[in-house]
Image (cartoon, rainbow, N blue to C red; front, side, top):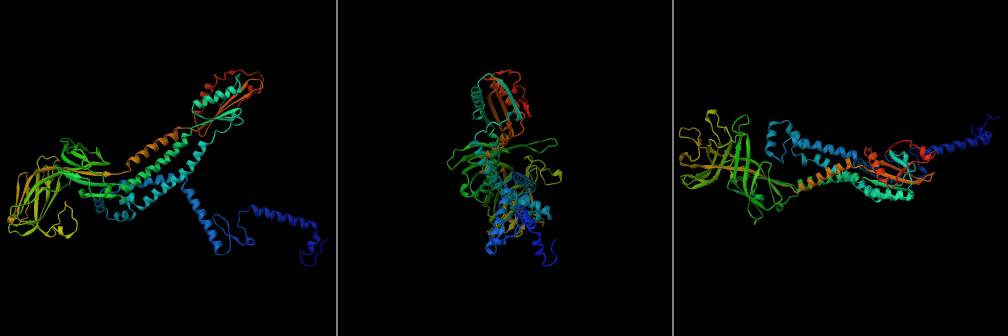
Length: 600
């Protein structure tokens, strides 16, 4: 009987004897095993450190160095985790989808890189949304921070996907087809027959047949293994590489591009230099030395319009007839530039984007000397080519020899019909052309150093001419008419009308690379969709009846309805070399049936 006096655990332990010691040892062993299997942090003070909860585990040693080592381990773990997520195919598809969504605002909202005038008009109509769009960068989507972030992440993700898959594909190309499984009848498609041909003869024939059908063949002792369809993975790699090529082409096109507009009047020319452009935009890495050396002259412009019906006034054909040359010593050649039919020369494309009329005038000062002779800059206001016309004549002298500036502004109307009650053109052709002008005298502000548009007249420091009765001076001119300014200030003669065309000269070095990437992506996608990776095995063994048992089986890496057909064709091609014969009754091969799959 156990004692009841004395300290607990002393007498009781003594009384328990060996049984208690065995129980204690069992408990310790169980606890140690449980600790080894546990994922909970373990107090490791005996080793000079202690476990700290973290995403990637590990023991943190005491002191600053221990904390830094643990923090470095955690940071490295998170970096690896983020890299694995970024280079996964799922994230790459999400980024590609986000990139396609990011281009939608660029198509719906006017872009400053395309048409600044439309952007300013949009700002004026949407005063509430414009500041929000500015903060989001919706007026310059393709150069915004968020679009660039998606673009760069997609670029990195694709590279991270391609590099390991490329090494894996190289390993597959270097490897040999695997040996035949032990039970070929378990394959999804298989065939078996008996033949009187020798096993070696059957295997040799199978090897020749598979090589003729462009299989990669590996011969074993009693079987032949073959593999085909490596172009599937090659197509996947080509598709991803082509996407990177397209991204690089897009980036290079944005960085090295140049794009400018030029208005050219009939008889005038253009040389591809920066000083010749009316407006010019370029990428951040573009240099003026990158401009292609060429030039052209606008010989004439022809246009036709619908005269009747609901489409009256709609252009039927625009054509700019030019003479162009490549380089300073290039041979002049004739060409016609139409809408959507640009001129391609010296690596640049010249597009026809606009058309209008240029009234030709001669301005004489108060002394009768010619102060200006040439076209008046005019811009269309509507589809019937009603134009706003402006002319600035600096350093003009009146009849007393006093110097000042002259300014003219008004409208040029190709077809004026006063019965309409407006001064707007009723048709875009030159049916009844008129030039409606008023004149100003004063300071044009050209010496202030502030750039001005040739299509706008700042009359804040000018005074409009007036008729003797005090009314504002204005006059309607037809070709051949002369406007005589009051107070002997001079004259303006309407000499004639020339047509003008606006051209856009575009140089994007990445276009050819982008086309190659697009074609490569289509070819790679077709290969990955239509090429099937499959393996075929042929085994020939001597049966118990002395005849050879031929087993043929195939396996595709994905569902393929063509595999049984291909296996049947291989069996038909092999049977002339291994003609089937009936097996001896009662042999195991005669009664064997596949446990799963289907016969080819």
